[in-house]
Image (cartoon, rainbow, N blue to C red; front, side, top):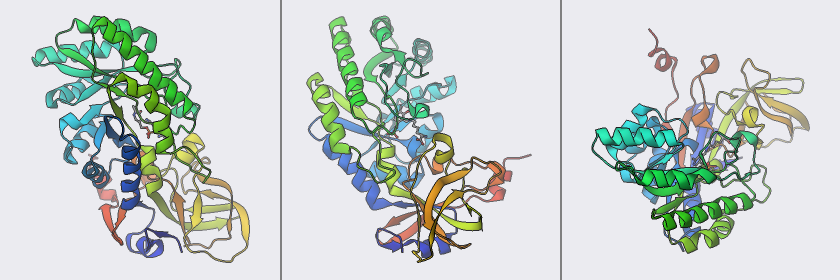
Length: 399
Ligand code: LLP
């Protein structure tokens, strides 16, 4: 029987119902510490990317481990605050920050706003002037580096909407130096997610270091280089670079700058720390229909992403190749195609693995389905960290 840190999964699913997200506290701790240790030789701070999973108990756990936060919206800033992060522990990123979001971030005084355009700098300048304050910003550059990952999660090429073209950044900083209400404290690059080839990360880091040197010549001295997130995980069990290989790929380039390194990992910490538990509701022909689908986990249909799907209780039923699908009214609502599994029965429990990142945060209410409950396993026991949504929760918004 499948277990999470020694705790059997079937009784947890029986108690809390399915679909259910389950997280391992020990894995979160271990994955966070691996990154922290790998960068120990260099001044650094880890700003966990809340977008990967911002359930309060998880955000609080990362804070307790020493993490800071990367927030991508006003909502994530507020969640970070409620999880106990101080403003100086929060960086604010995002390609389309509204005036209201910028104003709120300026009011609390976040560590840095990672700016995406010349227009955004002007807006921050104006809002800061009104408030008679000086706001710290980092310039998010687009280094035109191909992260060699899925095109939907590739962000660092000229064709992508993200950042300021690197060849315009020096000039922009020169203009910004004259502005009294903003201060450039950092440079930022995030070239994509689920990156398993370290070369693009090395190139992006090198581009930041070169630009920092040019800025120093121009008289702008900055405090940090933010290398974003992106470090991938193994979804199919094949070997991929870990935190040590990542550090080995970027530190030799970054260290000579003498600047503090900011990291924004999300997936690498959280993906392997979570699983989605789901039961079979029907079996017909080649299809095994589950009680979870795109509303709980959209990654397979959105990025053609592969997640291992394992029976929680092993049987000796003959195996066959099936499509493991969800219950929604969409043909693309699939968790796994062509999977060789023992012929299941209605009610059997399965675990969709490595779903701790970009799983529950991307859930939706399509077909009026309810957001799943979430439990955390810690010290041999499972506790609810988010209760299952009810229909009344949803209808409470409607007039
Ligand atoms: N920093 C910035 C500015 C980002 O845009 C992201 C992710 C991260 C950090 C964290 O990246 P990570 O370490 O998790 O790769 N929903 C997609 C992933 C979207 C990632 C968006 N940005 C998926 O399920 O694969």
